[in-house]
Image 1 (cartoon, one colour):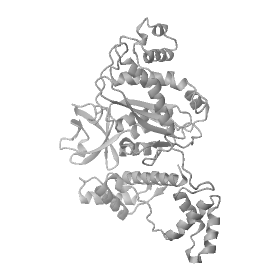
Image 2 (cartoon, helix red, strand yellow):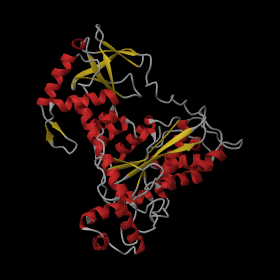
Image 3 (cartoon, one colour):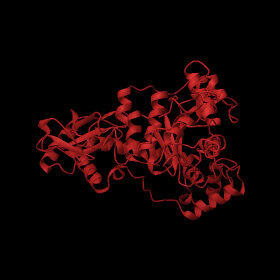
Image 4 (spheres, helix red, strand yellow):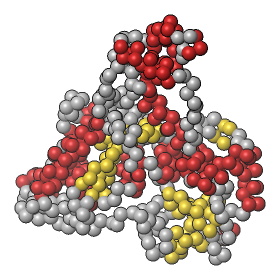
Length: 468
C-alpha cells in the first residue's frame, strides 16, 4: 500500500468516526415520529450541553449544525453523515505536471526538489509548482522515492504488525455443505503479527451476524486490538459493525476495491484451511467416512483443528508456531469490561409504545414503563436472544428493561436458522481424532481410547473450547 493509499484509508477511517459521533448525538432527535415541537426542545437541550468528539475532547454543537445533521440523516441515512473529502480544484498546469513526471522518469534518482529546480530554470516563475505539490503528485502517480519510476507494488505487501493486537485481519471463506445447509461460510480473524486465529465462526449466511459472532468471541477471549483491517463486503461496511468497533475503541480500515494489499496473510491462512482441513472434510463425506451432520459439527471439528494442529505447527513465514508467537511478544490488546462488550454488540430499533405500555419487536410483545405510553423509544437487544434482556432508552436516557409479554420468536428473523444437534457419528477419521485429542487435553489427560478407536471419545462428543 503506497503512502497515498495509506492517507486515503486514514481519511476514510476518520470520516467514519465523525459520522458515528454525529449519529450518537442526534440519534434521539432524528426520530422521524417525533413531533416538531418536541424535536425543537430536544435539539435546544443538545445544543446547550457538551459532547465528547471522536478524539475525546468536550465540544459544544450549535443548533443550526444539529438541524443540518438531522436533515442529512433523514435524507440519506448514516452515509449522509460521513463528511466528504475536500474538493480542491487543481491549480497547477497539467502540462507542467506531465513535464515533472517525464523528468522524474528520465532519471528516477531525481528528487522533487531537483525536478522543481529544473522546471524553474525552464519556465517562468509563476508556472512552477511548489516542491510539496510536486511531491504529492509523484505519490499520486506512484513515483515517490528515487526508484519509483515504473515500479509496481507487490500484490500483497510485506508489512507485518510489530506485536500481537496491533492489527487483526478478517475475511470470509466459502465452505462445504453441512447437514441441511447447501453451503457454509467461515468468518476468520487472524492476528497479523503472530498468524494466530483469534476468532472464527462457521455459519450458513455471509452476513453481519456471523462476523459479530467471530469478533465477539475474539474480543472476549483476547481483548480489543488497535486496528481491524477488512475488505468492502457488506458485513464489513454495515452500520452495526461500525457502531460495535466505535464502542470497543477499535480503528477500522478498509482495503481499496480490487487492490487487497495487506490481506495476503489471511488469504494464505485460508489456503492452509483448504489444504489441511477442508480436504479431510471432503474425504470424510464418502461412504467410508463421517459426514458433517450440521454446521455445529463443522465448527466443533474446526475448533479442535485450530487449537491442536494449526496453532502448534511452525509457520513458514515467522519460524514460530502461532500460539508461541502470540504469547511470546508483549501484546497491545486492551482488556474490556463485559458490560462494554455487551453494549458494543447490541442492535438498536425504534418502536412506539402502545397505550397499554407494550412494544412489538419482530413479532414479540414486551411490557415497558407505563410512563412511556405513546412515545417512541429505542430498544437495544441481542438479536440471537429476543426473549432475554432488552434495554429501553428514550431521548438518550435509560428507561429500564422491557419484560417479555408474548414471545413467539426467540431470535432475529435475519439470523441463520439454528443448526440441528449433531448426531452420533459411526466412524473415526483424522479430524475427529484431533477433536478427541483436544477434548482430552482440555480435561488434563489423554484419551487413549479415542486415539485407538475403541471408545466413543473420537466420535465428536463434548464441546471443545471455541466451539458452539
